[in-house]
Length: 324
Image (cartoon, rainbow, N blue to C red):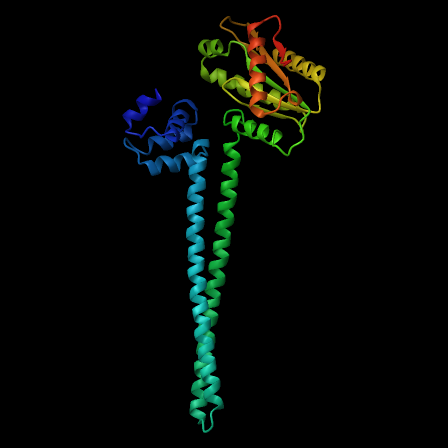
């Protein structure tokens, strides 16, 4: 569907354009859909990029950083030119001041010459004040603009690390957290990674539609966010996959937490079925690996996914721990 839309609107098949078209066609954002339609049949790339930046799509964050850097460079270049003009003005005033002093000190200087020298100094001072005022205004405006750019880039950075549907941290944020945990200078972490996958989520989407599936994911994310302490971490790392990082817990604690999460999800997240008046309950499979048992972020992820695969394969044991 997205490829057909790209061909129809003559849009270049760039990754960020794919993301934009995905949001237009599947994201359910009426404002974005209206703004995209306003671009016409053959939208320019610059207009597509502006639209992606306006709605803070993750794929456009690098583009925003590049634009911000270019804008900052232009601002700094303008400030440099303004300061150079101000310096030249000051140097000209110093030369004028020196010449006037020599003229006033010269023997036989008439009163008229002295008055002309004073007039020259007054004109130089007035011009210097105008120049200094302009420089101060330019510096103030430039500093304000750089501050706005900085805030905007910070906001885009934050958006790039947040899942748009659930507003949880996304896979990029999760991977960053893992890399921080396993830096060479970091102390070996003591805790656990739990990876959660919704059972038969594809069937839910096929039966009730993707919009219903998205609503269910948002409800699940809200429940997961409320189920952890502020010091813990939860992220959406895939379509229906979520990950938890818990600090300072051992294997029995991790298994107990996984059991409570699974039971709570089944109790709290019921959804309508095709039968009137009936409902079904969401179930999940959970893979667990202790962070202190592995040497790297890559190994941690691999072990967790292996445990999750084992949990999904054995419906009688939907919680599995990697013991390697």
